[in-house]
Image (cartoon, rainbow, N blue to C red):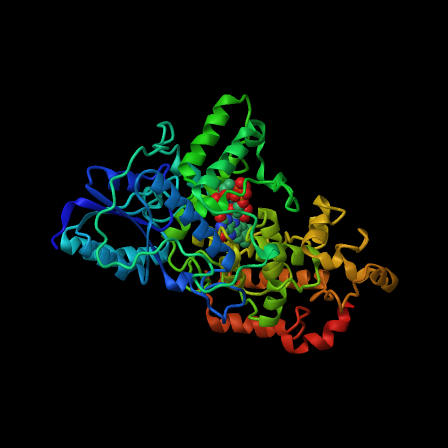
Length: 540
Ligand code: FAD
């Protein structure tokens, strides 16, 4: 069939919402039929039994569940407007091209995405569309700014500091014009021909069993939930006006200290621009409010900052070939990595946070700081890319630009270079939660440990351990390292690596890194796997 101008296709990927959705609005305008499509990519969704946690090869089950809930909610909202979500399965590029052909689509609309995966996918679909004369509308609406504009303004390279980003970015062009928050009607869906359409599948239909109740994230996906959560947050004007990021309590879990809107922003169930306008309205209505970088608006600007740098930096997600990343001789120690990942480091603060990650898929920003610092430059000296992979899989808000950006930051590989400032896995959490309630909640094995020992249970006399029904080394692990000596060694290694990066102007080869590894190897207290068992006694 020839392309027909009156049929349009709205391709949902992120942007799973009706409010502030310029691609959807444009798709609806002047179209006889509108096909709202979501393509399930088997790589993203289907079970991978070889992965370290339940889920697909790319994502843990909590995030898959969150996405499915978001799709169900979107489908319900579309139904209220006389439409529905057409769920298809297969390689998204191939499926889309088939849709364009079979449904005589004249207009293809989708939200622009800066992520590498979507850039490649979009190229394929755009090439087909331009050959066949299909109009494409792909607006930027996932972020506050168009990262390409900022990069252009900065002489074609991304700004590398938050302050220079703010200067270039200025007030967003749309900030004082109310965004469209409601769609009153949508064109009907046309004939869907030979397509095998399904409703939104359940996790069971995708081949998973249900997650146990205590393994499931308490956060439910979808635009309705996002708007409800936003409404609850902004109802407390004073809280929004006085928001000051580093002051939040990372151990607060009954009522988290921040908005927990990140998973909704990740999937675009919430528009960051709408969120921005809501905060802006509050700021205008109060006498005094905090400012970036610490304010809530400042948090959204951090998001855009990382999107911009990520978009303009080749190999942003790796150390090699990444010009903004220090070359550091990280260890590739799978045992230490697994101990960290599986909450077996023997440091309750770290293990509780990693349990919250596995069960909830979300932790407070400073909790993320603690575990990322511990794995990399603070204690274990394991490569930041390995930690990044674990977060990427398990976070329900896992976001390519923000996750990589923050791992670069926390490992002192980029953006932040004060490697002497290390989070203590013992005293940092204690400052906020001296009784250890957060630890007791996420690590019930330690629930009866007296508060004097809850952050360092290996120091508890055996009689206390017996009484608490938790023998260290048996019921809960001994610490994998001595924090004092491990952090000292990490500082020394970072110092050497920084000096080498400076000397060679960043052009550090694999051989140079291996030389540093060899030099450090002999005196290491950050144990190699082989010697760990022998040396474990050290930390008894
Ligand atoms: P709030 O404090 O309520 O902030 C509102 C929004 O601002 C957030 O939802 C988020 O979109 C944005 N924001 C806040 N802090 C940051 C930040 N440091 N960088 C960029 N944007 C920010 N955030 C993700 O959304 N996805 C990730 O994959 C991710 N990985 C991280 C990895 C590490 C190692 C660290 C240290 C942080 C990571 N963050 C990530 C950033 C931050 O921790 C979360 O955005 C935040 O904790 C989410 O909770 P919230 O929505 O309650 O945040």
